[in-house]
Amino acid sequence: MDDKIKFDIEFPIHASPQLLYQYISTPSGLSEWFSDNVNSRGELFTFIWDDSEEQAKLLSKKSGERVKFRWLNDEDDQTTYFEIRIQVDEITKDVSLMVTDFAEEDELEEAKMLWENQISDLKQVLGSV
Image (cartoon, rainbow, N blue to C red; front, top):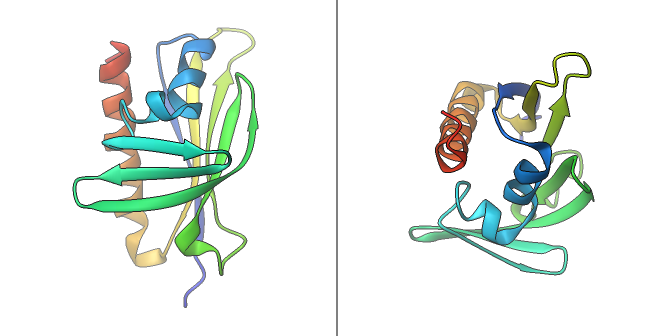
């Protein structure tokens, strides 16, 4: 299996960090934009899309700041994860979502486009288009 490549994308977003955190850290918030439905049992989150289901383990979270997950189908690869981090510019107070993820080289552009679509959905939910 090829090593996956780590990538970071920044998405400027017009919303308060407190509100954003609810959308990136709770099953109800994530099901508004990330997948059709999300269930959680402790650290285990189940993401449901149409006919498929993926499970992820919540690796860490910091209230109001970030969440980090690992897909369970990547358990053999302990180095990959996806993280969504809220970043606030100290001077301008502009808010951005920073996404860190991993993809195989030939899937890199597709993975970035997927995040762009997901964050676009989030912005619509927030009324921040």
